[in-house]
Length: 482
Image (cartoon, rainbow, N blue to C red; front, top):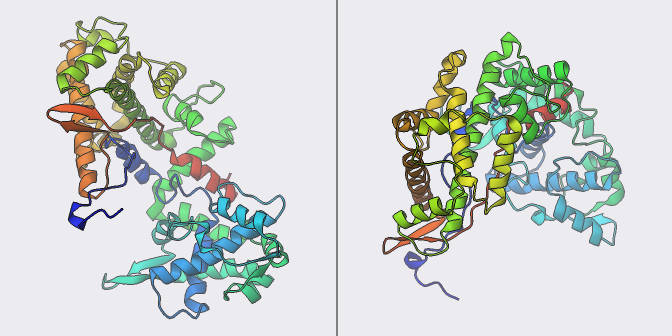
């Protein structure tokens, strides 16, 4: 059905990402202390693979038009046949292999034993490698501007280090029939050729020793990436001293914030790792602070099942909550008890995530206050306290606001602080965040306001943010650092 003139078309894709604008703070700190490797770049393979594709595209493709669109098509062809080769090879490493679903269907329905290129195997730009491109730039395998003039290139150029990496990668695969006869041509590739290719090219970089050495040099030995090396040293320490071989978000929160191994053994940090451990502690603290706020936000939206004024909404949330304390008492009485072990803290969040938890408001408040207690007057943090101001420039809620908010309400009632949190850090904070998204042509509003009444538009779901050390540990295993 026609939507009418473009000016009248106000339809926007709904986005659930960071509806309160507070998750970005932990992400920003993580980006400083663990650059290049992020939550969507878990395998080392894709960096040399992508650099080789750049090299091959420039030198052998015969494509004169060096544009993002042309490169995207060329890259996807190479990636698609790599995925096919991997899936056709028994026992191959497939952990975090991207583009699998459609490619598996292509194998299942193929009756000829010959595979044409399917450009629809992965919809986004650069297949599953779009997130690795930034790392190629950071490690200077490619550059996007002239180093002397600063003029931006229309398409990235390969550096000498990039060519060195590409040639090291090419050396391993150039003996395959796929490389010799099929990679440059828009023809069907026989299954036997792909199986031969799959025995050579692999996600774990087995046999790509020179590529591994170059990557280790760029990731961990470069002065530009000293913080990444610190994070890697932290992982090595946990691996060697405490036998931690696998990392997940649950165990990482326990180790990085409570300094306990998954088995409950206390972790003693070496002096040279104190700074990086403090920084990761702040990251997890920010995640807990975010979780506490989101628990309250979720419960608030669950109560908005009818149009309500703001005052009616706040009153309903308080009346429907199992508060377990006298909220007319001073905030200091709740603050003094807000210290929790790992399991209690995690259980409160887990219950709040499940929804319809009438203790979500008081437990969310407890977690928020416990973060105040955890970091208040911590002299050992030193310059890392600068991270407490992160979020000021992005209209988020920095940790410094938590300190100010608690200090201003410490002698006032628990109810007054709770209302302050719900009004300022949730209702208004969401409005500012969603309004900014709207200016970027994205719809992020979980409520709308009509005639002074709030009306719920979407359900809200809680999930913990990723922790880059998990992906870094996988990269380190790929490179045989651990």
